[in-house]
Length: 574
Ligand SMILES: [Zn+2]
Image (cartoon, rainbow, N blue to C red; front, side, top):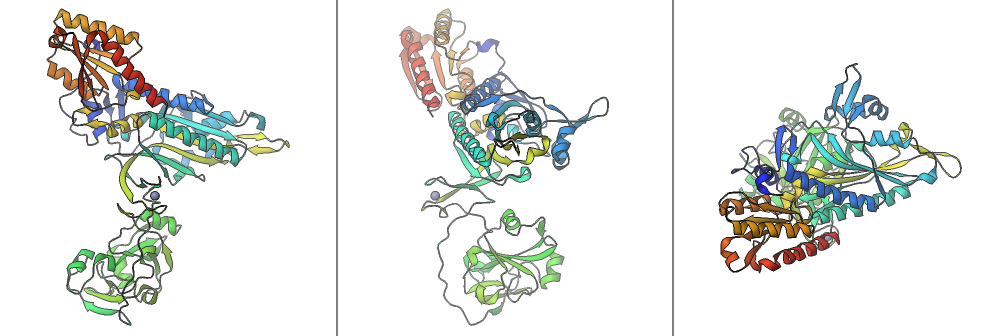
């Protein structure tokens, strides 16, 4: 491709509304354009990247026996009503009516459609099967943002495994797990496999594949030593045991005028360090006022509270509700002597003595509190947020805490699509529901995640495996016949080797061309200029390291091709 005749609309500045690095760069480097909130046009460079990502996905799916389908995006409401999800998916689903007034939907996933097709399977002998497609999906995100990270229309690889029993499902699940690891590694992504909540889909096991990014919205704790990784709703850590000095025989009340926060009390004369305070929160859990106790320096994860109490509904209590229940305002609350209210405490408080907490009387606290002796804890739960550097629960390593983006999700559905007719006859002639699994990878989201992980201040730095072009030839001085001939010959030679080459033959200043080449992130750049050509040399620059070396023009095509082939082999062996 010659740059002078290609559509690469690079911009001088980042788009004003962009925060995520991938959003800024994909727009500035001319890869995508927003059509409306959460809906993007994929321009030629991005299309080439997506095609390469899809090829990687397709290769690994075919490797595990996947068969590719192409299903419609326009679905009759009827199939969604049969599974019950027409109601449960709510406003996330795009709905419309055709000219006859029939309810329709734009597909956000395809369990219902594949389950309908699976009703044509008759015998256990036809199982197992893995079905997949790479297709457009729709989701009516309430707050589309961060460029391609949260959109309303996107391409997804979704696959579905069909098995006779749960043992078969376990095998299909593991196959997908291994395939996903290979896919993300081939894309140059460092992906964490994180145990997750299965959410509205139900099912028994659910793993999310996450990549770290400042633009992410999900926090994950992970251990570099043993590979443990969990999102904040599930993550735990091992805290060192604390041996408290014994306190007085009973709690001592003391005045703390105006001291309402953990910090206040830390610096207050006669107060206590945060780790020796008890933080008291009040929640309304399924209608019941509940005290939630944590160590002063720990934070609550609400989802852990909800999961731990198996609550349908919870919310922080209002100041009025708190005063009515405890007779004091937040800042002076505590669990000592409280009866008739549920009390849930974080496990890190177990066995602690000589602690300080609110006295349920404004501007008074208690010290010398022995939790086992003084507080009637009904439930001990893991409720706290883990912190960077805390010990891993599985080994001696330290936990890292990072913001992440979800790029893939695999989960076990089980037999919930029996109602769609997904059943076969087993070897005894008995009808058995098909056991299903569901597995997704967002294609544009993967592209954005790669940009999040591979960029620098000058622009994108594509891994070779997914780069829109592997090599860019920057022809300095477009008007010179000599550089033009040399660049053209090099371009033809590289194309002859089967390499994706972009020839920058524009009539622009060298500085502009170098800047654009760095911005769009092509892994190798060859600079062909009059000065070097006098000595028969061109310059080869590696985008990632920005290291350059001179090579003979006559040997340039072979030398660059060898570099590219070596790198291609490396990524295909992952
Ligand atoms: Zn570990």
